[in-house]
Length: 510
Image (cartoon, rainbow, N blue to C red):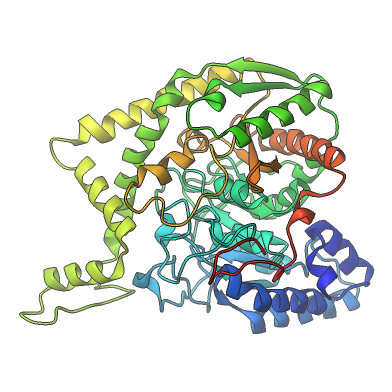
């Protein structure tokens, strides 16, 4: 049964279709792996074993009757706990929603259910998606399967760790400033942020509405393409949903030819703060592309130097607005003052004091200040102008190249607690991923190698708006080149669960 968890989603789907493996067997194998791995990684907030097995049995019965099924039917998936699931609690990683059971499904959840993918559970995350480490969760931190003394990235760190630790072949995350791609890089997995508006956000608890995007997290580019195809498409319930049809991402991911592909390399890729191991792995991957016939073009995008600053004004401003609904009056946590009169103002203050963690409070305060009278134009308004400049720089760049490349994160996975006294350490880890969210562009991260510290490095590709298939075409080709060089799949390098280290002693990987 352990072999089942090592299969890619595509391989597992093939075995399910042929009858070699049943969906019940596949789900049970992953549930067993979750039981083994969770003491080490803490990827899940809620495990829905009974529901997953019930779905698996239904798929096996339908397959036995000869019904036509979705290609991924019976393949289990993990869902970030920011995405609403009917009948299963959805917490957003916060005490504020620790007991909330939604009465409806998010659109992406409904699509997964309709396609027959058993949902293994809801994955851990930074509270309301605020963080780059998955330390800021009311349900405990998630540990990096490569080294349990290191962070798995965030805010979708639970989804990334679940995929890396063989607990799920597929996972769904959300990306506001890199929250899919950065944890994918730190855990040696594949993560994709689709074009803004191409995947429905209906039923996804909002952090920053103009930046949030749902996307796939997997172990291969082909698996990401398959899950992306399932999730994408217009949704009338989402006012930001785009009407364009979903192209063939799976076909694009099968590409192995990069001859004539123009790859733009951001000058910032070699700047200060990029570790030597990341720089070397990134350059080696570029050399592979160049050797296979791609044209490498170095580009200067001046506005990107200000993207991080603009993001950390726009994002908290939208956070301040979106999280105002958690007031102790309508739903979620309600905390009353211990003494004195019970007024609306005092209940709201006590609820928010107890319900939000310190990182959420910091961003709410920063956003409220940026939106306040007298400061709106100076901060929020100026940040939106920078956002426009970032979009223009990208537009000019894509007139010269097909895709843009950079490291996904400037360093490999770092230790826990490094951002406690200096949050800028955490914020700077998103320096390469944030620009795509400001511009609404699609981005993909895939592992390019292992740095000298023994931890994975992520390689990021960006494409123009609605050109997501370019990511899969270039990413699939690069993945094949990397596998040929190393003589096998990247994920196979992760040590067996229980071989070394634990979350308790943090001495090594799993």
